[in-house]
Amino acid sequence: MNLPNKITISRIILIPIFVIIMLVPFSWGEMRLGDYTLPVNHLVGTLLFILAASTDWVDGHYARKFNMVTNLGKFLDPLADKLLVSAALIVLIDLDLMYNQSWIAIVIISREFAVTGLRLVLAGTGEVVAADILGKIKMWAQIVAISALLLHNIPFVLISFPFANITLWIALVFTVWSGWDYFAKNKAVFINSK
Image (tube, rainbow, N blue to C red; front, side):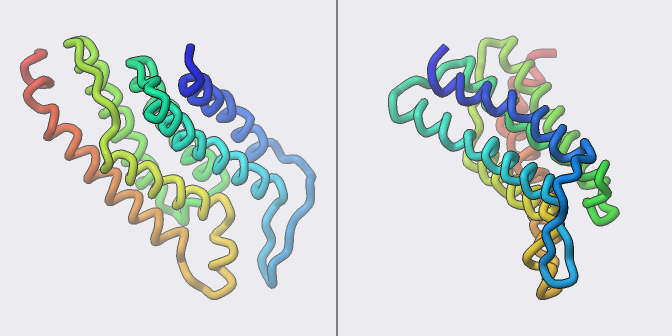
């Protein structure tokens, strides 16, 4: 197994650690910013989430730079992204940090399952499709939105700016758009595989 694939697997390994830090009621105290508080475990969990998400860029960079792109990596990398995002969205719902917009998490997770299903169909025909630029934009929009939500919209809440909510909607738009684009580009293979 090459280095980029090991980095991808490290992202998958970080997911349960992130979930435990976010959901187990550790008494690490709280940070105060004006009238707002942020549990320290939420700050630590968010930093871990950002670290895990950053490995997406690192593994891709090494794979391309040192010509280590593999079919396993083309499959594992988007799978790791989907697992990380899905876990984070479920954590946000559990912590009631989605601003009563849990349906957005359902749309995002549903899109991820649908694209993964299509990837499996394509793999059955011998075709492995790597993520395109729209998929990468979608992923980073989701990471920004989830990070802002995990941080309870701090520091933007201090100036009453709904940054987390706005980025969540941006992530939703890119999620739907990239899913539609993925199916449109691969429609012929999907229809012919029936």
